Length: 251
Image (cartoon, rainbow, N blue to C red; front, side):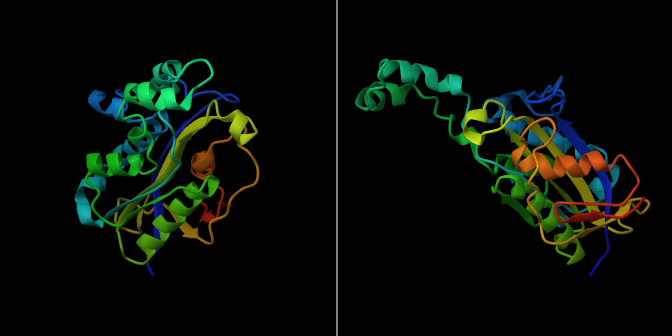
């Protein structure tokens, strides 16, 4: 089993309860403008965070694409609700289902559902960064980000990949009625590699069983991004910590 070290991370998260990520510009973050129409807000945040994490590791180019892994926790999300408004209006004030089927559905943009698929962050980011190795996507609420981090550590330790980017993204603002508590949006991704592969050794990382933390983040429910965001925040300090089944040694 190889030792796994943490070499970089990215963090995009709301700053206030129920708020949005401040000053977020997906194009400035490196996402092609033409791709935005096929991405929900959560996908944009996730892809931007993966790109930001990768940009902090200049040695990435030395790792063969087949030895790079990407692991993502993300939730399926509907497209922009405004895209459905014309269809709902066509169904009448009482929402006649027959009228919706006949006159409304043809008005729904064909990409409305596609752009909210849970594996979009994985698909877009791996294509943009040329990650061809082992990968995975988990759609399991808060546990999704925790599982993604765990699998990344195991993949490196077991020799399936040499470098991995792992984390999660979610944009749940406006879902309070469904979730039952304040919601937010955010994304965070961690760059891990086999010890000695990239520059000086970073902080050693181990993964136990992934856990689903009971508490809601102070900015609101972050879904699949909860554990990755918590880990990224704690990396600012040098003390060891354990969160969501991930253990990071002292710097």
